[in-house]
Structure formats: C-alpha cells, structure tokens
Image 1 (cartoon, rainbow, N blue to C red):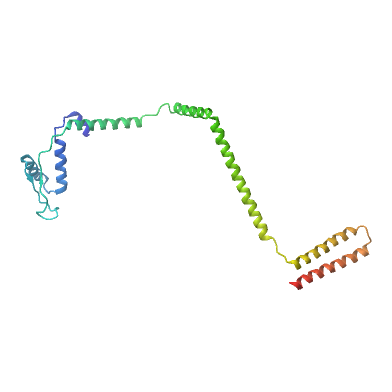
Image 2 (cartoon, helix red, strand yellow):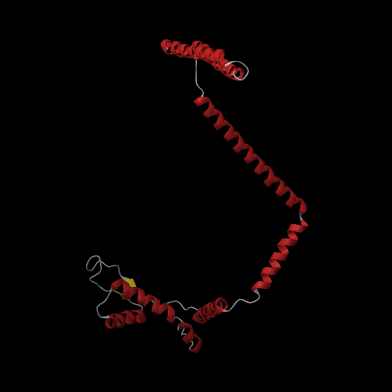
Length: 219
C-alpha cells in the first residue's frame, strides 16, 4: 500500500524524518492526550525550543532529561521513495517467478544426465580406480569377518574342551581299548561258534565294569 501512494504522490522533503521522530517521542512518553502533546511538540520544533514533557512513565517527576527538537536536516526523500518502489517491484517479480509453472524441467534434467554420462565416459581411469578401491575394501571386510568367526569358533572349542590329568587319561585309554576289543569280538561272532563268543562277551563286560569302578574310586 505504501509503495502505491509513493508512486502516485510525491513525498515532501523531511516528512519521513519528522514522522519518525514524533512516533519515537510518543512511544517514549506515552501521553494521555496525543493531540495536545503533538501541538506542543510541533510548536517547540517550529520555534527551535526545547520540548519538556513530564510523564507518569518517567523515572522521577521533573528528572526526565530535556530533549531539544530542532528542525530535521533536509534529506533526499525522493531517492528514498524510489528505493522503496524498486524494492516492492522486485519482491513482486520474485513472487511471480516463484508462482509461475516450471517449464522444460525434463529437458534440463535430461541434459544433466547426458553431462553426467559424458563425464563418466571421459574419465574411464578414475572410474576403474574407484571400482578397484570398492572391491578391495569389500575383500578386506570379508577377511575381517572370517577372522572374527574363526576366533569365535576356536574360543568356543577351548571353552568346552575337557581337562584330564594323567590318571584319567590312562583310564580312558583302557576303556577305549576294551571297547575296541568288544567291537573286534563282535565282528568275529559271525566266524566262530556261539559258546566261546558268549564267554568273550561276558569277560569283556566284566573288564569294562571293573574299569569304571576303578575310576569312581579314584575320584
């Protein structure tokens, strides 16, 4: 709205500064009667006198610093108005561009893909080096995984591996030998008569039972 009137009407020189100073003083003093306050304010400004106003919002009555209101310095208000108009027009142009439909988006993306493909084709060595690097990194990761898995299996085997002393090992060897003898005699079962086989089997079972009893007594 302001830019509309600035384009239609010329702004008097010094008008902007006068309004700015008056607004500042009104907000600072908070007068109850703004019209009376404005009359006194502009009369003092016109005569170049010091304007004093005791407000209930001051720190202490009569202690508010005096303020002199002299005629403002002349400023180039026309140039300021032009800047405001240019800023407003530029903002409107940006809004129109943002709301306008985007055209030829597919063509630009197609050109971008072509440029990307051309850059990849023009640098085959870099592409090969990148591929080799990725493959090498992948192999290192696989090797690390294999090493970790092997260490885990070895640790599990060491944890579950039983620990025997020399006496236990001797008894285990005896039991294994007895069991092996039983297997051999069972294989001979088909080649010999039944009676001696039964005798062998009973003797072997006695030997195994005796070995087990010896182990229990030692423990």
